[in-house]
Length: 520
Image (cartoon, rainbow, N blue to C red; front, side):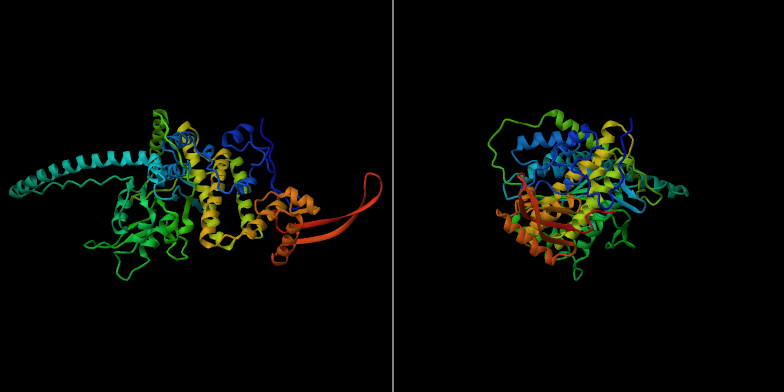
């Protein structure tokens, strides 16, 4: 039986409900959205009474979720760093083989720039390594194969020199020389852009860059350039977007260019030097990162370990994603293979997109987060691509994005939104009043764009860790905020009514309105 369709909300109907009954219960349960507080709209932000968001392990592809849970227990660390590192690693395995296409002319790759924020000694390297171990192992195998190929090339080259001399003696053309084997790579650690672009040229699928300390990576940009400061940093800005890159190499004729560069990045950074990652530049580098900044976990010794089953399932998933075919053109550049949405997935994504945009326009939304949210818009698609590719690779299913994939991606993106608020709030200045105004705006929007009720009812129904304890203080704050915020209005009037005994009473009714709370 086909599920009933729901048309887009129109003016007066309010936002999408906290539970979308169109989505089957088993999907909601699998993705961890079966609790009433969750739903398409509620996923804009995790519950406001959670100061440090909990990593949504259940939203990960199943083999990844299993690895994250077991590795976190075995290592004695929060699951956040392992989960982000796994997403980065799987994205690098997909590489340029697939892109997600929400509409013609708009595609997003699976590339992720990830940063793990933790103090020294908090097992950052172990957590990252638990997820990138499969990539490291593959790089080692490829390097050994290349070493053998180089040895064979040296032997063929010696034979060629003999054949060339013999041909000269006989007055005939020499045979073609042997071709030096290209080095297949999947992982790099420390390299300059000048060295990296030729590696990308030989490996059009893409690479994973893993760095223990991201600040050293950022500060190393342009240190070899004389007077050309900014060019290497611009390379990484362009690579995140998949824009063409090129470099002039000494001793080479003409530049080496890559039409569709693909590099995923994962590394760690200590909280005290986080500002160094931005280097006081407003170029969008920091906004391109997904951050995890979990609470410190003082874990005691445990005999828990990662099971062979979890390791094998994760490695097989990684190998399956690496096995997705990639088409290249005559120039050796990858040809995009777009993954499109099923009808249900597309409808859900449109609702998510509109809700995300409404959040950016909501009263109180910090100006410094607008660029971050723009990148998270792209990341929601990238996460959906990784989740979808993992699902249909593991199950041998049709290559398209389903509704479940979108929901998983949205839950992951919601977590990264909260982490972005923590990180950028610390860097740009956390404003508790702005957060309260955002929470009020989200509450009013959830009521359909208008709330009418007493100050007591408003105080009881609004869930926010930022609201004052007294209802009068909350009403005063909202009244003052409405004077400075366009599209947000506050009205107060006295209403007379009869009580149960028929006596006339009066009460003060507050009416809060939010323009454009609903996208037609």
